[in-house]
Amino acid sequence: MAKNRKINVTGTEITVVENNQQDYISLTDIAKHKTDDTSPVIGNWMRNLNTIESLGIWESLYNPDFKPLEFDGIRKQAGLNSFVLTAKRWIEATNAIGILSKAGRYGGTYTHKDIAFEFGSVVHRWLPPYTVALGNSPAIVKKHWRFGVFQLSVRLSVLSSA
Image (cartoon, rainbow, N blue to C red; front, side, top):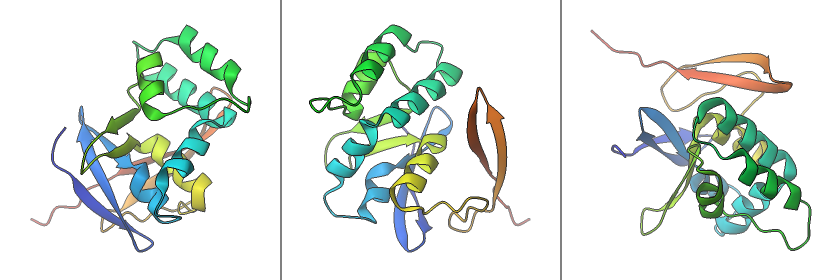
């Protein structure tokens, strides 16, 4: 992973790391907007059937090494009272690339920006439906329908002063 950078979204500092030339946003930092104990917030979001299906669709689109049979097993367990899904378990079981789990002092749960925007909108609506303001970087938001799922595509553009 490359160096971390911070963005400010509605007064909340959120860490962004680069992995394989893609931005991964800290769900831990997003969840801190709601509570200091972020594990239950992320855990409850991850065990939701809609979340699991969205993660599966994203992985199917962007990860050639995704394990669909393992995904199907996890999806069938969603909704059971005893079902618990952690980022680490998801990654290990499905060979996921959309979520990163880092242990230690600067650890946390990071997801590809597509997934993080969905988490943010579900957890506390920090992503308005049609606009995104990430720090000083302008963002271009495009709505589209893909594989029966409504998605927001966000492309960050960097302005350089020459």
